[in-house]
Length: 268
Image (cartoon, rainbow, N blue to C red):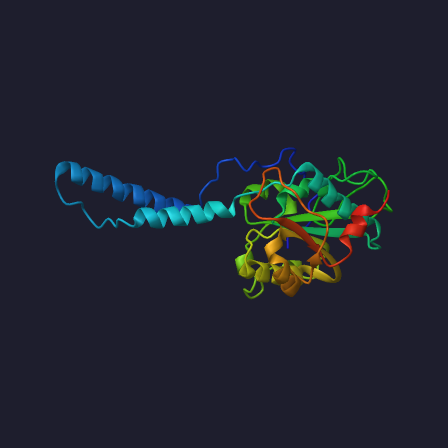
């Protein structure tokens, strides 16, 4: 695990889901080979000769599936402002009840909530300070500080520096995977990228590994995962309904292993 560094600022602007995605090197090689073979085939057809080498007609389909699969993993669905504020409020109120010096928060596949979590500063805690892996320097030295880490497959968020860790839920059962973060976090906010039992099961394995004994867990996902969420993550359905800037085709709900609704409805 990397040592804390004194400067790890969160960028001022969110990464837009409309930004161009840069394909990885292996995908680019497949694309280049496809375009090369396609050009050879077209030139041969124009000349009335047989193309050199072998050009599979199903290459186009294979490439489309491969690239589309990769880009789908980079699709980001952004919470609306109210949802981001409520998630930050949950963090704040749980942090206030925490007795340790540092309140460690993990956000798994939930980048749109990250800035609101680390910038939550109603009590002057997190604004304009140096945010790093486990250390903050607030004005009040006796205050409990919040240290947040974003775990994301999308490496565009590497711009968050020491607050970012690239991860792939598909590696959940690999030997030693995520051991560096075992029993690390007081609160985990997770938004699995897919509404499938396989995804929820693997996400659940990662959540369990990085949880402390009394870690609070918030899951934001589709209504269809309710049974899997209970089985693999140990969270139950809540009244709070996260919403997005863009309408999603699936009903979206929240789940937690604590009384999340009471936390949100608590008077100031």
